[in-house]
Length: 491
Ligand code: ADP
Image 1 (cartoon, rainbow, N blue to C red):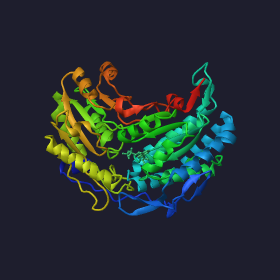
Image 2: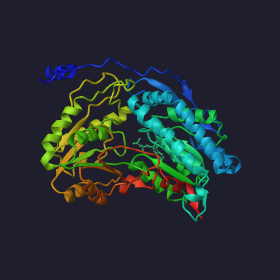
Image 3: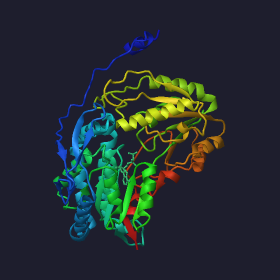
Image 4: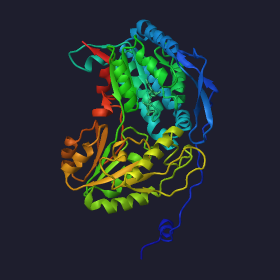
């Protein structure tokens, strides 16, 4: 007779285990207000104005951030130009590498503190900021440090020169990671930087500024000006900035492209997505279900490459949906600082409203809607994971980036139909293909118009791997050797 374990007894009796709360308890200090980081020091904003940064899991104010205007941006550009002409720009690649390694090591040493701050400011679960964001943040500095003294080998036979001062504007979904993957290659190639974090999540970029001070990075090499859209626009407009690197929404990306297009600034854009996740009947279904959950739900759908359109082979639709529902019932939504939480808070009240609005539109446009019935905290911005089936391919919910834990599910019968459906979007950031046959994965991947394609997995990142999009998902690549090229002039 089969021995009954505690677990199997519980399952057979349909008992449900509850976890005790396990909040991350690392003590962090947050100042009441932060100025801009210009010329190696924190300085008050020219306007004297500050914005509140809210903890989205509690609704409470976390700190105030300075609102930057054109004068602040100009000060930052002057500091960055000085550093480019007199200090950072004069260093050899070997010397630059030493600084980048030092920054990477300090990030590793302070990673717990940074992960806690990221979670408090942005609402993402601590297990994501601790296990995904922070290791990648350090990796981007280590990886790019490795290239700093190898500029002659990036494009053999060519001479690569830094551009000068680079303006970088980033969003709220991966605050510190976005800062790292923009700053590290720019510095490795000998440039200096003026960076604007998102107004919702500036805390870890400001903590990174403290790390730059600790690493004794020459003053002005990296300057951080905080604020909202107008501050970003002042960076885009500044005549002495040679390059703009932007990650954010397609709408703002288009605006910036138009503005920067009037100048000779170089431009890279990493914009929105509505990425397809194709599952063939011969795939390992349980793993594919886990991949689907990881692709859209575990990050609140706040990844620009989230697998928000699931396209499953018709013969496994019912089984897949049943397994997906069972898995979704196990998702733990709650306090993002709790180590057991899978899905944290939606980053801002505006974003939560946007998600709710799109879901309502989806319902009125005729899709079948299913939302998991799990307890949500009563304060803060929370939303239970959900999906639509039987929605038309032209419906709003099928075509618009929701940036929330909302999935659409459709079916296909042939690989060609899967490719056609996957490409039927204005975006082209990422895709996933699940099948036990490598030949099938390769032939489908060849037909997909997406910058990154994962095989039998999803949302895996590496500093050595280029990332970027097709069509309205943007242009230029970040990460890997490709990610260095937008930061150099090739001679
Ligand atoms: P998301 O929807 O991901 O927040 P946004 O495109 O709204 O993306 O914001 C991304 C970044 O762009 C943020 O740092 C934001 O402050 C900045 N931003 C917003 N409007 C502008 C603008 N007109 N010019 C430059 N930057 C802007």
